[in-house]
Image (cartoon, rainbow, N blue to C red; front, side, top):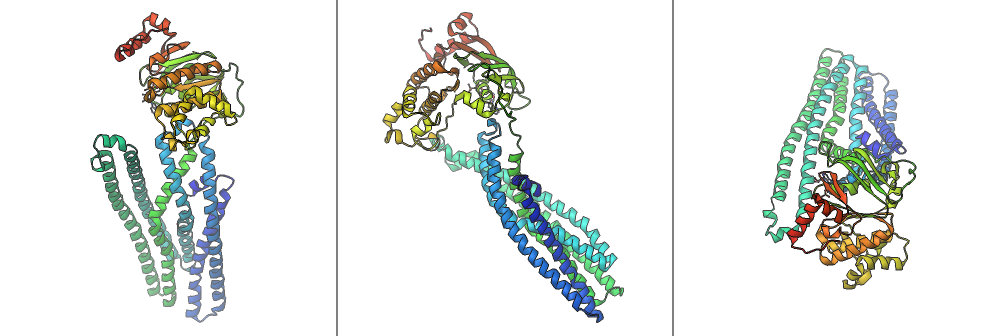
Length: 575
Ligand SMILES: Nc1ncnc2c1ncn2[C@@H]1O[C@H](COP(=O)(O)OP(=O)(O)OP(=O)(O)O)[C@@H](O)[C@H]1O
């Protein structure tokens, strides 16, 4: 927990935690010392010796413990505030260094949950949890040392209890940790299913499903219930074992004190003080048992937050390599897979000359989108090279690489702002005329004319007020406005009505005036005019050429062409 907190604070602020822990240790030691000083007071009273100096020492230790407690609590609040502000800053700083591929829907959902829970939990850690944890170590150890001073046999008995207690607490900790991990996984699954259920209402209702007919959600809720029941049982066993161990330790210590008293080694009054000290030894441990569940849950949340910071950043050079071939794209013998054992690209090579329009075609799952992701450096290749503008993408800063690229993906995300603001994102300093021109070319002005508030209409979160094709048109307008040397365009399969296709082709022609265009085409009639068509199959380019040349070659492309035209009953005259 302390290691994770240090990571969240970062090296420049870690001292805040070190100081807080030091004050907490000081409090634990002083409270142990104050308890141990009761014994000489009782000894002096029982033997008739002067009690004043002992009382004074006890008073000084008690006041010191109270003062240290006050400082420790104040430091705790300051450390909580510091950790929370540092947490957001460090998470933000680290997230921008992660490869774009890291941000899939699942991870982003988890991150939202972890960051929200994490903020709540950090206050709790400093307010209630870290202190009992540290005191439960410092205070009993101080009491053990003090007992050695009073009587070595009692000290030895206490010292022997320590490993037994450590074992019991380890057992309890492990069973609680296991339970916490299972509960968290079941909660995340149930939460995701609820969100899925909400998001997909239209589909579910179309198929006559309500909450009682939607198996994945029902199963997740049932699994969550069973997991909670199972982990509760495990947790109770663990806590009972640690509670029993504390009771056992106290009983052993009391028995040793009684034996010493009967033996005449300690006076009866001193024996009472020693029994009180035995309880002082066990008290913080009993507190720890009480907080153990909450500590484990907080520890799990903290670890998941720290794990985000442990994700390796995308290595980036300090300076960008010179761009020797602006607008050129080259993939050379690229091997890449999302999992180490399943390569998606197996020696993919392609040269896209500057200013050309190249279309990637091929069966679904062949790896076309993966190529575009590698060009935008969502991930790094396993072997081979990806060059954009003549330089290896790994030798370019993110800024330099993104300046060369405009991307139009299938799943276009629009911000809940006006259409104009969403297009202007492509080049914030663009003039109003340029924005309007880009919008016209991409066919966004047609959408504007239909919307109730025209240009000022907000598009809703994610652009839900627009259709898939309309969203892609806005995204193309962004790319037109950006005037980047290279445009990567993944044609939206969901949006290929004739109107969208018309705008898409017009936009490609316009983009090709200033930029290299690499297009993933799902409909072959959109690639007929391309300068180069690359047929991708099973992670490799199997054919390249123009539409006419590839038809003449009568290979993979010609087969795809025949399948697409005959399948749809089109009558297209190529060329
Ligand atoms: N994020 C991911 N994690 C794991 N596997 C993935 C991921 N994205 C794609 N894949 C897998 O990689 C393979 C290639 O996918 P890719 O999307 O590149 O194909 P594609 O040719 O673009 O297909 P389509 O034409 O259907 O879009 C597929 O088997 C796909 O399941």
